[in-house]
Length: 113
Image 1 (cartoon, rainbow, N blue to C red):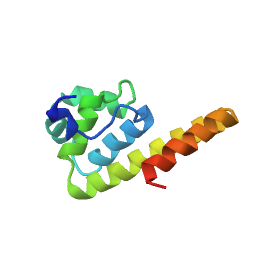
Image 2: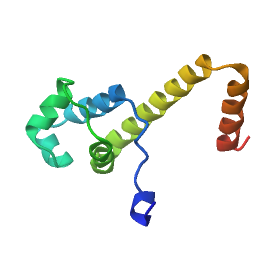
Image 3: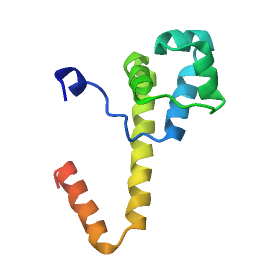
């Protein structure tokens, strides 16, 4: 990973649904044209996100987070945390006890417990 990548918010594991919600959040205070300009995409691309024909790529999502207003960024980060927690919960409930233990151990390590 290059030094430029280290400062980029990690977005690869964010679900399509959460990506759409980020766009909807940012679009609530901007026109499609304004949001397209902020994201560096065409208005057509934003319309495709809104209609859920296409989803924002990792690069576009990272740009959205970076260029969001402070209050939007706070909401976006909370949305992403909820999305990832839900995914971990689904994984936890789908695996056997051995792997549940592994998940608990990794989460404890992350949390410093």
